[in-house]
Image 1 (tube, rainbow, N blue to C red):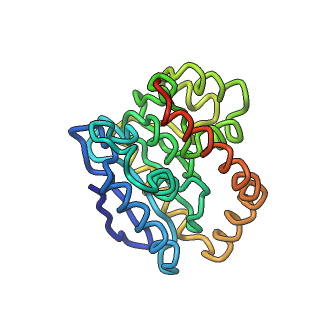
Image 2: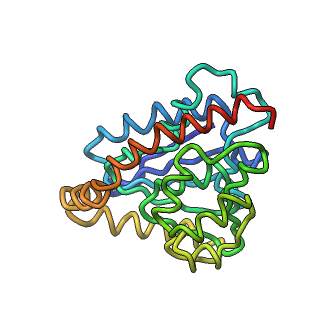
Image 3: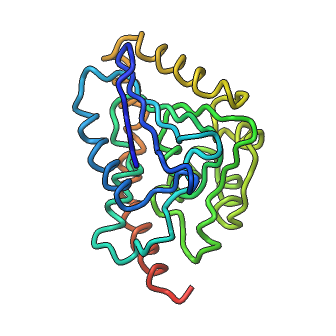
Amino acid sequence: MIRWERLDGGVVKVVIDNPARRNALDLASFRALAEFWPELAQDRSVRAVIVTGAGDKAFCAGADLSGDLTNVPGFDALVAEALLKLESLPQPLIAAINGHCLAGGLELALAADIRIAARGAKFGLPEVKWGLIASAGGTMKLIDQIGYAAAMDLLLTGRLIDAERAERIGLVSELCDPEDVWPTALQRAREVAAASPRAVRAAKRAALFARSARYAEQEVQERRIAAELWASGD
């Protein structure tokens, strides 16, 4: 389930609400996010967006693999849209990471401009352990954002790292005690919202300009490679 609310000052809060399964995303949640982001992008009254997970155990554990999502027509495109693979949201996006941030959950966090994480949070892309790759932007964005060696360590082993390691390699912007994650994220959102909205959007657009063309080319290859794995015996 995805729920959202408008807060004061042009801030929107988006919550992934499935705490019983560590906020894993089922098909309905993927569809809700894929429909929600484009609507939000058109809303000029929204100046900053915070995405978080319900409860204190997880931000998002990725796709809910208890159902058979592989047979859903167009599922790869749906996931790309839901997890902002090509970072199309014009407003600054802040991730309030209140627990485990794994697989598609980490790929969604990689689309955020600012990441506030709880001490005790865990991060990882365990897809290789399932015979898959992180194909919702993980292979593209991780190298770009934290460098080749650190990215390949996560992509090839599927291991999890703690929040302190994530901060050292630049995967998160700031660490807080768990009870301070939301207040800190909200403070950053309000700081963004208090600045010139035109300048903020322009800064983000300029920062992402060079990446966008490169990501579009990489996406074709990533999707092809991922499709081969979905069809494999592994």
